[in-house]
Length: 237
Image 1 (cartoon, rainbow, N blue to C red):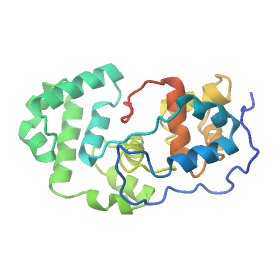
Image 2 (tube, rainbow, N blue to C red; image 1 turned 180 degrees about the horizontal axis):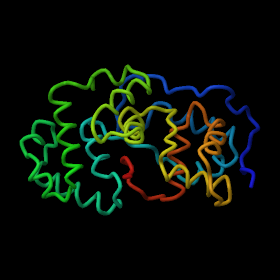
Image 3 (cartoon, helix red, strand yellow; image 1 turned 90 degrees about the vertical axis):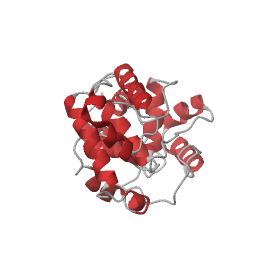
Image 4 (cartoon, one colour; image 1 turned 30 degrees about the vertical axis):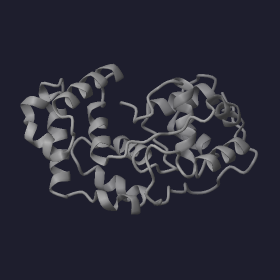
């Protein structure tokens, strides 16, 4: 079935526009681009024009700490949100100040005791070691473009492209991220644009061309269309 999408209003043509590096933002405040993005998406796309007003003043709220953002994403990989929340709660109980040095002090045994698999325990310890040894340039990420940040993050064990894209969205608040590996995005496109029929990555790219340079914002509203009261922190995967 053809996508139920409005191509009027000037869908972006040509190559995708990457999210620019933005000035540092308060991760819990309204992103500086949010109002403009909502207005343009509603003008260009009739599905967004119906969807966005349903959520009033709600907006993306990020996680300001880079290490915590990435650690939470690792905990959430390949488990249900409920299981991820349980393991995360146990981890915070034994390590309230979730800093790299404190995680390394805990060691593998205590991390495993929080319900983490052997592999995830190794991933989180490796992440903590990268941060403590300054083998990542967290202080420069806000100045780097999307692909440069992704390229650095995926060098860390357990950090996939999806995890890196969630970091771009929820920590760096980048406006134009399209996480094609995210099942929620694909499901949201299917339900809202294809009447529930299966959606390919090519279909998703075609639909998202009309959202640039605000693909993060459109993705967030599609997530909300599936789960209006979901947590505003990075979704587990």
